[in-house]
Structures are given as C-alpha cells and as structure tokens.
Length: 270
Image (cartoon, rainbow, N blue to C red):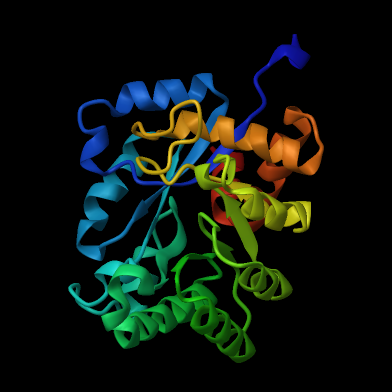
C-alpha cells in the first residue's frame, strides 16, 4: 500500500486570503490534500491584512502563514517596523518574513522606498531566524547587491520566491546559501532558460510553490491557480532533475523542513 500513496509536497507560497478563494477554501484545501499537498504557506502582502491571513492559518491545520509588505505596495502602505514584524513572528504558525523585495517593472518610481522596506524585513528575518521571502522583478542588480550587503551584516535565511530572474541573480542567491522556488512559470513551454537555471542549482536548495491564484501551470494555464496544482510544477521539477516524482517530492519536503524549520517543528509537535 505504501508505494501507491501520493507523495507529499508543500506549496511554499500562495495567497489564500485573496478574493479568488472566497467561499471555496474548504474545497480548495480538500483538492490540495488529494493531490498530496499536505502543507501550504499563505502569504500576507499588506500588514494591515495580517489578521485575516492569520485566521486562515489558525482555522486550517495544513496552512501556515507569513507576512510583510509587498514591494509593489511599499509606497502606499505604512512602512513596516522591525518591532512590528517581531511581534507578528511570535505566533506559532507564523513561519516567514515577507513577501518583500524589489519590483521595478511597474513600480520603479518607488525604488528607494522598496529598498528601505526590504532592509527592514531583512533585519526582522535575521533577528527571528525565520526565512526571508523575496519577490524580485526587473531589479536584479540592486537585489543581488542588497542581499549581499545585508548578509555581511549578519546571516539570515532566504527563499527567492517564484524565481524567474537571471542566472546571475540565481547564482548570487545560491552563493549566499539561499533557496530558489519553482512556480508555474518554470513549466511554461517558453521558460527553457528558467528550467536550465533550476537544473544548475543544488537540488537541496529548491522548493515548489503555486503563487496561487496566479501563474497556473499546464494543464490549467490561464485559469485560477490553487495549491493542488503545485503537484504539476513538482512533476516538471522532477523531470528537470532527472528524478522520479516521489524522489523529487521527498527532496523538496526535506528542503522546506530545513528552511522553514518552525513549520517543520510545529508539524512534528502537532
């Protein structure tokens, strides 16, 4: 019986508080469980919405959460403080700092504010020991520079969420001991370069995610994404690394447990 069991994986980044999932969360989580997705980290992107995100994690055993100020919102939200993030991190199911980062694609005019916000989140990650969750788009040089500068001020853990940037940024992150997360983008036919970046990365530094409700992988591309579909991305990941699905799933589970140690210990104690 054991070898027919669906391999377990974790959706390391989704947004279950978004309106796309209103009134359907129980069904979404049931489909995730059926697909072998035993844990999810739902991400709060505006700190004022933290209570709603926290409630989802408190209500549903497989769900953990993280909170931060998304870089695209940094100019319109109050600047986070380290103390504020440290207070949130006391919750037993709060397992990461962010998402934070830099996005110059649509919001380059707020680059200075984004960089200030990013450094505050890094300080909180360093102090709590929780992983930093990074969103990076069209800002590779500044991102690599700030991550390295801050690492010299004191080590911290980090995941480059939904990685779809350059090989150079991937290498800079990996050289700091950080992790790369594979999203539906890596499964798209045109994403050969992204798959090559992952293939060149150490296997023990790779996670999978959906970024749901965005970026659904085939065969659901163009539709609302949901945590169950991280299994489609993980199957592509297995192909990228030349592994069978169960082996790749097990490796990503071990990677998640290592980086998100608070979530792993909560599960062990539950």
